[in-house]
Image (cartoon, rainbow, N blue to C red; front, side, top):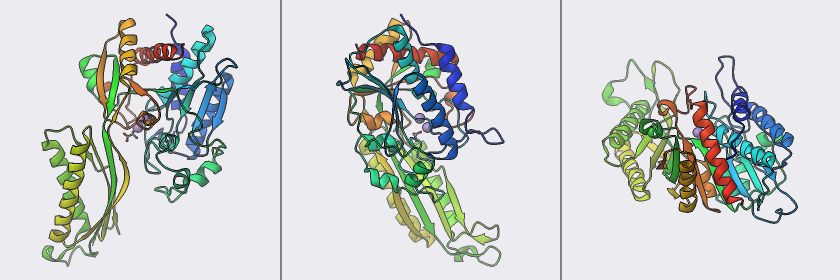
Length: 408
Ligand code: HGY
Ligand code: MN
Ligand code: MN
């Protein structure tokens, strides 16, 4: 059984993981930023040195394509993920899957394997959605779920415009998004949760992915003097926001359903120690594997905000930032993942993905599935994110086996 070149894969994960660090050594490569460009340039250099055709589309999605005259007309097998990161990130989220995809192609090329179809690896633009929303943006465009113009006009949290930033960093490509119609799509990713480690399982065969609802809530009260304004006379946007955060947490924590709720970012105006906040702006991330239940959670929040506005004498407005329904992956590929793990003497667990991934967009246009490897302590979106080298290599070998089968 052929295996991937472990030192090459692990070395590249670490090399890419060193790109985009600030002077406190924190890793941040937000979509279309200068550090994202550095990561992109490094990846494209590896694609070229591997002898792949490099294609970049209008929203900066990067493809490395291995094709031969014999199979050029066939729909390619696509392996993908992302190399943009959150703020103060770990080195594995997204990058592991992209670099393992390249590793699988290089291993197969070197082995003399001649695939029945082209095999390509993709690094999708702005999977994280931290600077521009929605998340999984590049793969969503590729799958036809949002139009190119809307994406290129997206305004970031820093006031930048995505299309201008892509041009500035040299990744406003020529290809029309969606130009590559995959025969099937595979994504290898760290689990980013505690399940595999807790169960001592080295491989996750991901059969579905939960629904995601992102909203921005703006609460407007009245700025007033912190010292002279009686408590009964306040329209305190800051306090109202705190009530919402507590409402969401208590509701999700108390629910029997696996719903999760997160307020990850918040800001007050005028944000001064002795001024009652006139405005609070914060984001709400709600997720649930069941669409009906996710809708019920969104409705519960909406009615809570209505009551709160009256009770606290504030006004509330809500903007939808992203909304993706739960996704089922292709059972035949999930079974191939399980069989490949068994064939290598590795345990595999069927599971749901709690995190969003490009695979959920690609599942709209091709049979898709994901392979997970354990995350130490279930930690991710955190510099302490870690997966053991042996687990990383095992996951890449499962990807190698399934790709070999699907391209034979
Ligand atoms: O939010 C997510 O689940 C993904 O990391 N973008
Ligand atoms: Mn990811
Ligand atoms: Mn992520």
